[in-house]
Length: 172
Image 1 (spheres, rainbow, N blue to C red):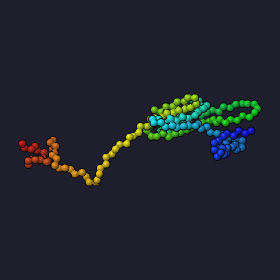
Image 2 (cartoon, rainbow, N blue to C red; image 1 turned 120 degrees about the horizontal axis):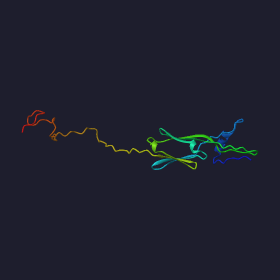
Image 3 (cartoon, rainbow, N blue to C red; image 1 turned 90 degrees about the vertical axis):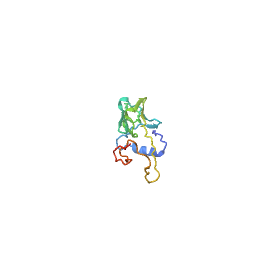
Image 4 (cartoon, rainbow, N blue to C red; image 1 turned 135 degrees about the vertical axis):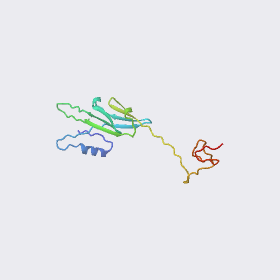
């Protein structure tokens, strides 16, 4: 009796069986890719990865520029049995998942927690630059300078009064 894994869409089963079919004497290999969720809250991005069977020392979380990478390996558990048929469906091997983060993420504020086979990485959102208002001028003519305003009293370049030359104090 053959075991057939249930797939929700029959087309997935076709492609899965096509790529898992052994050629010659080479056994089929499945790549281990952990299921990963990315959730956005008001203040953080939260990345959760299911990593059953991965030891803490075989797990790495790195930030290179704006790319967060989770990598590691899950070893295979082989058994020796005499007689009977044994089927291994759990995959093993190395994995790497990368996520591009928005610009401005503070790398020192990223936290990672690994508990019961689930890795949770919390990334605080970067500070948003608030938009500022810019005044709009109406019309294309420059504003006229009103010459009826008196010059400041301490202005030495002001026009002289009462016949005095520029730069000389006015006679009292």
